[in-house]
Image 1 (cartoon, helix red, strand yellow):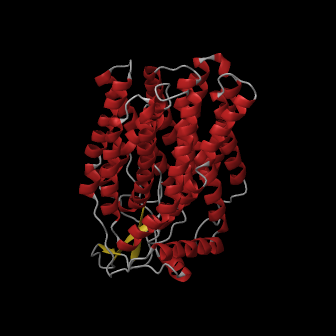
Image 2: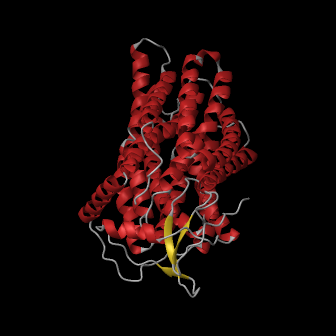
Image 3: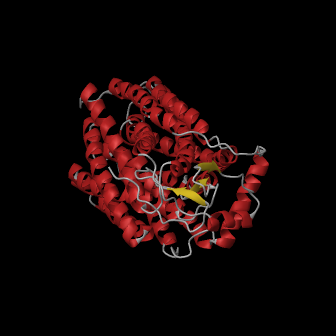
Length: 489
């Protein structure tokens, strides 16, 4: 366990508390959450911000300073347990178990179910792109971040458990796709509020380490739930075991997310803030984009580049286990074992790369990770006839670089977020990522179709080329992005 390090003292009597968490799963924000009076009276709520004022945002950033006080360990632990608690949706449902189950022959041919999953994933991404910035902005304006996170978490737990109703018959494919798609939307929107809540439990000096440890916490949670499933249901999975695992995922989320809601509270605005309608909310969003473009064009370039490569990273998660099952003939049990080993490897590598992030900067970590992923993904395609050993070696090697790229991406953005804008900017971060979220699913499906056109019998393995292509485009877009001057000042 690592505690956050203290930031430099502020020379003035009043300072603004900026925070960063030490095991944030999606890394962090630098967002001032309270002011400390000169008499040491303690935290006070921030004033409402003017969404249309560039000067106000800049002033909030310049006059604020990083926190000198760290959050109590129990509060940081409570915050980190939210990622532990919601990890089953990513690890068990999206990656290693339910998506594989949904693309199995029980629901249709491997190619048809894979294409259906890619389409539903793209549609879910569209909804996230439309909703994330407005809902994140709403949490900023009302101060009801934890309230929103609470109901979103409960809905996610209910959706996870409801996947039990998806029986192994073709007629249940649509139900499974709809529930999975809605779950993706809710999970992503909840993450927007979760990212922004980092400011209540962290300090900023160790941003890279914090980001890496955060991802590591998530991976450990993934290991724990997979081990529990194996302990209860055994290693030889059938459809009933898959469905029972969904009930376990729902219960896990409901239980382990309780601490964050006991430890953290909403921080309401001292003055009433009028609600924005949808049209005005998007107007404020575009105002934010124009402001960012004027003050920090490299931030815009980064948002575009990260949207591309993050979609490729999501593709690795979404379709990796599907390839293991369909192309390399992994059993459900072998996929779970792979998932456990992969999470251990990914957790350790992400924490280590988090330390490297603080030394060499997040951009270099991102570039190293993306180059490695492109090379390893290409190797899986070329060597696919080599059987399971190829996926064990190259697939596990890929897991060493997915987490570091995601973690460094969040720490890169974290250095630029001004006062009172965490929810809106991370909503924008989610939106830019999801605005192109159709690319990886489309590229995966398109590559499979291309393989079929070439006369290849089982063309599913061609899908890896689609994922590699998206990662390569993101890598190219990241090259001109500069770290220096990357701020809203």
